[in-house]
Length: 166
Image 1 (cartoon, rainbow, N blue to C red):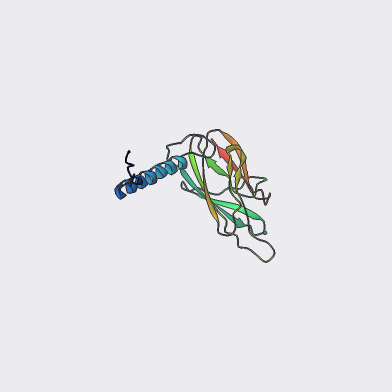
Image 2: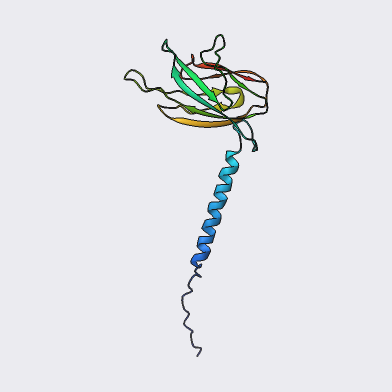
């Protein structure tokens, strides 16, 4: 008569704790590299651009007559000029520049109206989210075509200005 061997239950091999920590570190580094790569891709392109951006701060505001307007400050400085038919200043950018727009809504809510604004340049696929009071967003695009383009708020059509790329 054959003797039955008792088999022990197979235990799963355990990974040493150092291997788990190493895998975790590799995953964190990979996620960081992916984030950096994605942040180098402007909204109007499918590939990264390795240029130092021109920083432009766009703020919402109210004119003395109560109409909503945009104002801006550039890392290059300069005067804010309002073109005929526009309520906000003209932005002048050099063709080929990488532009990083930093948009902030500084208009407080009132009991009559909630303050929400957005910023759009349709030709460059620049579309911010609707920004509530003191919300902000940064959008980077490549100024790769010359011409004159209108920037605007879809919530308040009177908020518009001119973008000139030369």
